[in-house]
Length: 357
Image (cartoon, rainbow, N blue to C red):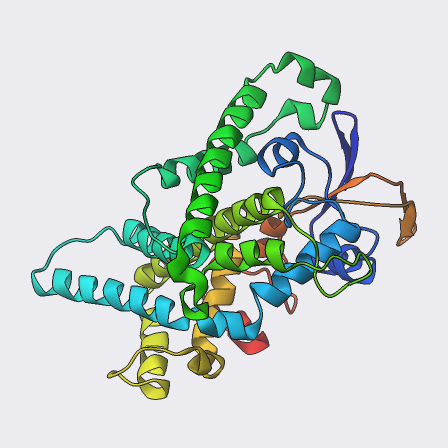
């Protein structure tokens, strides 16, 4: 579907087959992101990963994060931390069950995700100097608010919705918080040892270790602004995806006791009742994998994903799409996509899903 949002030509993609054309077959053309006000004001001038326009900078910063933050060795490095936090959650639930106490599972899940990510990113779950949760929630709220300036740029001068003012205020507070945390890391000599390092430690070390030769392509030169933008992306991505997906997964399982018994039985058979699930167990948990995929299908965290933008003129299936056209992928519509000639129902773990996965 083609339409105009303000003065921006826009394509809405509503099927998996069409999405493959835009995001895989012609991914190089649609790899970029549209320039929006939230990216400029809250991502430190487009210095992050998720909303940065496609180009040399994005490729370099993505490579840097892949090597220094998201490599298999780094994922394994933080496994004890994840195991400890999940263990504390399980023990808390056991105590509540013993005394027949009602628990708010949504809050508990959010808290454990918050603790894991804060410790991975800056080494502690809380900091009394700042209200981290409120700042992060405000970033997510402002980033998800409809902003007329993104569609009719000349109206930005008037700030009709007050969003520009709010974004600048929030960014100033986030900048102050992140700068304080970074200075504290630089002054903390106990983190010089590798096993004490968090994400900010690793990123700060790149500032001091980066090569002087501009021809060295192994290490991307970064500064403090880059680090702040990367950390912002990590925080928002972690909270708005993991916590929400877990919340919906448990909601669906609790509403469908018959379905819930199957992953419970699988966990008992594959892992056992006397130990925790390890990363090596995950590939053997086929039904649990289906639960995760069904949760994504029925309750996508970002129903329209993050918008893309074409970097050149292109023709797809006979339709001409000009440069700088925005592409919105309507994942929510996929719930209604027919399979095997029958319309999929909005039920959790249905038969046609199990037979085609």
